[in-house]
Figure 1 (cartoon, helix red, strand yellow):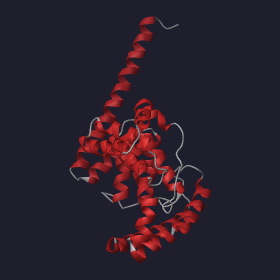
Figure 2: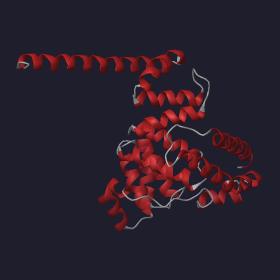
Figure 3: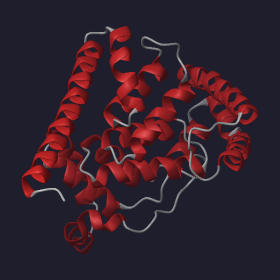
Figure 4: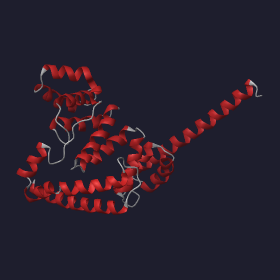
Length: 275
């Protein structure tokens, strides 16, 4: 039987090795971040890749950005987004914000808006300021979600504690609200986000629909009419992958999705001239 002294020595030894391992991971991340910030992407990749594979969400997120934007590696949007998804699934708020923004930027269908809302909400509940602002604007404008001034005020108020620029939007929003709704926002706070929101499509968002039909010419009409194609493509990919994007991608469905994105990008370029 081990003596108390031997047992204590073993615990100390384990703690030392654990601490040494953590310090190594932090050192590798710091080296990679310094290289990344100085645009030395080859060095950054060398440092980030091993610790990303070991499960470090900070490294996963930046590695995902490197792949998405072709920084030090061959650009691969699918691989990059998969890395960011893994980091977000580790409850890392910055990656949740990134993933929510990715879905929001390409959102046309309910499914895409739902995922944008989901990940931005997760980041917002953890106090991510940019996520709170982005999600607040969605609720204020009814973009992708049912308009909800109470939820928007909760988010603008949370972000406004640290970001002065959003306080004007917060105060302007409060002017159009009843006293009871303002009190509800104050009393409920972030707990108001327990229940899922009602999700719209791009076409159902009133502001977007007005822009598409009234201001954006032929390109806007094409984008509006392409919603059904995107919905079908997204549905096909969902059937292959399941409800959550796990990173195990289906080649034919991905090819269809890439073709859809190329079409949408082409339309978006035309919209820049018309809008």
